Image (cartoon, rainbow, N blue to C red; front, side):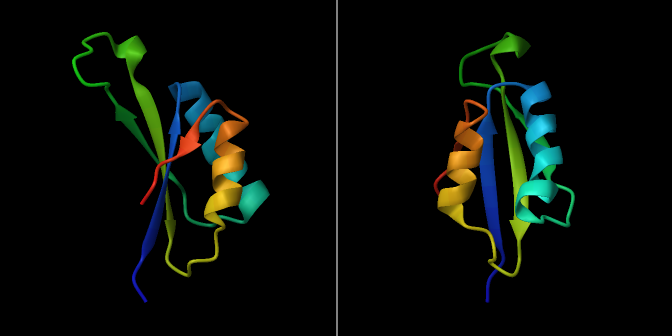
Length: 81
């Protein structure tokens, strides 16, 4: 069984931090999600960066569709694998 990694794309750092905190409550995620700044291509302004929340799912227990709906609540989305 290969490790699965889900990447949620969110509009800003504060939102990403909030989502990362909610993941354990909503989905039972036990491993701390990783927050990654993702500067948009061609953009120099840090305000135009998206933030990624990377969630490891080694047991493949997370529902991708549910994660996508969850991210949408925060004006984000689940990146396709």
